[in-house]
Image (cartoon, rainbow over the protein chains, first blue to last red):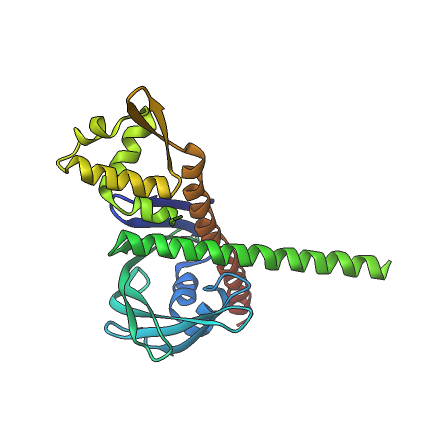
Amino acid sequence: MNMDFIVNKETKTVSITKEFDATRDLVWDAYTKAELLDQWWAPKPFASRTKVMEFREGGRRFYAMVSPDGDERWAVQKYTSITPKTNFKFFNAFADKDENLELPGSDWDLNFSEQDGKTKVSISIYNESLERMERVIAMGFQQGMEALLQNLEDLLGKLTQGKTSK
Amino acid sequence: MRRDIFQAIADPTRRAIIALIALQAMTPNALAEHFDTSRQAVSKHLRILTECELVTQEQKGREIYYSLEIEKMKEIDKWLEQYRKIWETRFEQLGEVLEVMKKQKSEE
């Protein structure tokens, strides 16, 4: 299934839906356990590094997105509501390395449902301010560019190797 | 002075102006009739939109008509596209992680 990705500026909400060929138990774990989250949360070439993980209502995940140069972009996700294997919500805000929040933030609502062994994840991200949403989108643009360049580099590396081995 | 395009669309009045002039070129006076704000306020918004290069002006007789730069608006779409790509990459990675987890589970 392709990903549904809808940005609604009127309601300041980004909605993302995606189906995975895995049971809900596995998908839930991948979203809620630090060692698994760190394997996929950051789009390459960025890396996700979780420093604190308390997956419980009132708990938080404090983590950094680390760029290839080692630049760290910290964020905190405060878990506000958890219905095991079905739904969890968190308040997300960028932070400095000492966990001082940069407000405003965004409210995330994640739903998990399984059918025929496949799991659908629906994510809704509400931004308190439109400016913030736009800033995040702009940052995404930057990361997307870096990811593209990295992929290009990988490709060029492979092409070069192919040439020398000939 | 050049401004960030997102500054242009961060304001509801400016978004409304964009929507109006997307349909047809309009004068500041004609635009002001659509809002409760003053003609000066509309002019200020138009100045910001001009600085963002989202609108162009054209003199017709004694009036100045403002129209939308459609190409510039497409930049916003491009940025959104990049944001969408991040989620695609993220989900591809998650798919790979899930495959590994499935294998581990079946081996248990």
